[in-house]
Structures are given as structure tokens and as C-alpha cells.
Image (cartoon, rainbow, N blue to C red; front, side, top):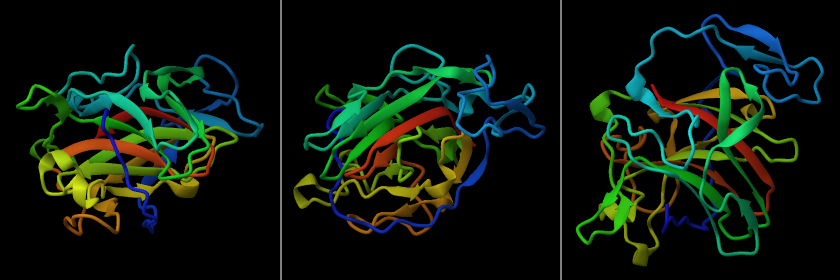
Length: 267
């Protein structure tokens, strides 16, 4: 979001603990050839690759949907008290990022099963802390009338984590970190101070080798996230889910990135 800042300190990240599943994963998936047909998804150089799509799903808790991107604009559906928007940001070095600022959904070439749009971010050339695309869970005016990120209580709804589909382009790195900001990371909470350079110590995990040019589903519990090794320290078992401020995907400096994200949900 505007004012979104991230540290330049190097850090050591945890091993991937996410549960992943192919393409559009379901309990009874069926393969569809990866050709540019309406439900096949984007073609890939691998002639033997298949797109796995589920049958029509059983009833799903509609309040768990964060964003399916099947809409115009950067704002997420106004569900269960969530009212944020996707925003792309980066360091001040001479890189390029698209989009830069509010991030709108983009048409998926060939589609992905029943999905027609997704979030798509590309970039390169940054040399400080890198770049990020983030979603504030709840944006609202503060006491001064200025819109800012405010905490969202995921524990009250018994959410155990976040799932999403992701893939990268053929020229992209897969060094993408999925992360969550809680009260220990955001300056709005008052626990860390920008003047002390100890904010933005998020809980996260690198998507690693599971993130490739094929669509995959990532299902990541709160307990699978580890905090960065600086800043104000929170608990050892994941973020404080009573005060979630945003979810984000970060890219390190000196890389080329091309990331697609779709169907973000709580579980």
C-alpha cells in the first residue's frame, strides 16, 4: 500500500513447508492437455505437460475467498470485513516493475481451468531490497482521516492459513517469498518504530523449487511461516493471527521476476 516499505537487511529463510498440488487441484482431478483451449491454461515448452482441473467443487465457505481476480480494479471483494487492494512497490533503485502502484487483474493467456484473470507482476533491475506486491486485509481511515492498513482478525474466523495458485514465466526466478505482516511488522500497530529501523519483520516462507512454469496450488498454514531475523520479535509458531495487516509476495534484488497469482483463499 502507499507507504509500504521493506528492509534491505540480508536474511536466511526457512525451508518450504507449503503443501502443493498441481494446477487447479481437486479431490478428483482430471487432466486437460496444456494447449491454448478455453480450459487448458497457458501452453508450455513441455509437450507432455498437462493441466489438471477439478470437477465442479462441493460447497465452499464463501467468506474464505480473499480474491479470485475475476473483476476489474485492484480492490478485493468486500467479504468478511476485508476491504483492501493489491499494491506493487519496490526500492528506489533504477529497476522497472509492472504494474507499479495499484495492481489490477490481468487476463490469463488461454485461461486456467475456469479462471480467466489473475494477478500478474513482472520486474527487474532493483538492487536494494527488491520489490513486493501486497494486499492489505483492511484499509480504513485513522483518527486523522488518512487511510492506512488496520489489523484483521483471522483467528476469530478460525482461519488456519492461506492457499493460492501460482506460476512464474519462463525467464523468471522462483526466489519468491510469501509472507504475512502482523502487529510485530507494521508500524501502525505501534510495537515497532520506523525511526528505529525495526519494522517489516514479516512471517513468511520461500516458495522455492515448487514454484515453476506450471500452475501449482500452495496451501500454507500459519505455523509454516517463520519471522525474519531482525526487528521486534513475535511468537515462534507463526504470526499473531488476531492482527493480520497484509499478505505479500516479495522479490529479492538483482533478479528478473514474472509471477502469476490466482484464487487466494483462507482455509
